Amino acid sequence: MKQVGRELGVRYVLEGSVRKGGNRVRITAQLIEAETGTHLWADRFDGPLEDIFDLQDQVAVDVAGAEPTLQSAEVHRSAARPTSDITAYDLYLRAVATFYPVAKDRVYSALGLLEQAIGIDPYYGPALSWAAVCYMRLVNDGWTVMPRIGEQLQRRDINHPSRHARRVSSLMQTAGTRLSQRPRPARFMADP
Image (cartoon, rainbow, N blue to C red; front, side, top):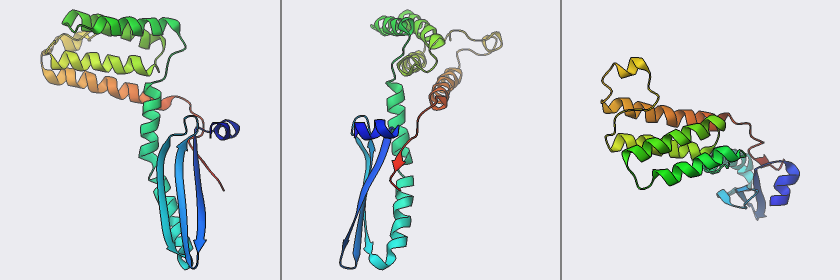
């Protein structure tokens, strides 16, 4: 499967078969991650031969319905994406080592290192994920002073939990947007 993926320049392959028995047809299809051979989705469709076009439509709808599974696979792949920048990687490793044992000052220090790593490589999934963990820890433990917060927000009730929840939500959305905007090759290939 790896070779097929490389030759076609695709990350995912949709493969299947059609078998006929008497006046019945069975269609099988499976979506496979080419690099790892991992099966992301599979289904079987049975029906009478005279309804072959209805069966074909059902296959098309179900394959299109595999999109959430494909998106989930892409999120996992992106989250594990290493950086090619050694400085960003070093900052990330230092941040993870700094985070434990968990204490307010350690979480802030780790967050500062992670924000530097994200500044170098804005698509670095593990750094984005750990930054979100730091923000969530700040909220959950009631450590209320947010780093790099604007003057306008500082004049408001900074201790209100909803302020922290919005920051975490914003960071998560930013991370998702950054990862979704990365250029990617074709998502899957179907045999015509």
